Image 1 (tube, rainbow, N blue to C red):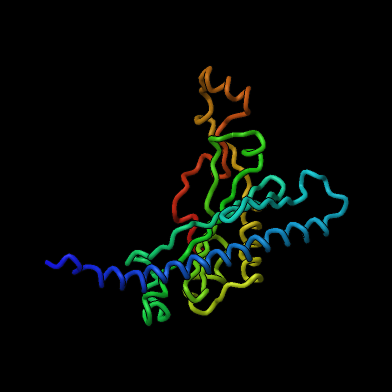
Image 2: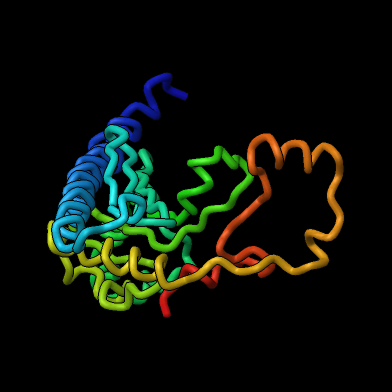
Length: 230
């Protein structure tokens, strides 16, 4: 066996798949920057339309660098996070059924931007055990085409993959839908049996830090189906 037998294959992978992933990473970064611009614009626009608002409900945008940003909208915290890796879909995913991917499987490689919903109070009171939920994730490929999995994102369904290109307006529309979904989904009272017994350690921590695990779906099992297309 030649010691250089595998070198051509390594070179081929670097020139094809590795280069492809770097290109997708660049496009995902550009898309995330557009999403952050949309977050800031939305905060400014809503702030300008509020009439004599209570300071506690005024939207607040914060940029946490290359991979994360947040938008507080009253009691909701929308956190957008860009994953640094590039992904392929498993063979059971319906993405493989659309002509755009059948024509060229390389179109299926995507970067991902996740949009999470937390309670603002979870951060305000440092409640580290509180829950946040994935409400949308944006997939971007090498041609800057995208689709979205998530609630109220039916206009950006995977069947539209190959037709929709990333733009500032598109990112704003995804963001607005995610915010509306978060704001209209209210906090649920936990079942009595879940909170009727508490230890001294727990109540001491509660008194010190207001720590009681809280999330909008508390008392209900959160399944992966909850973040798929409607």
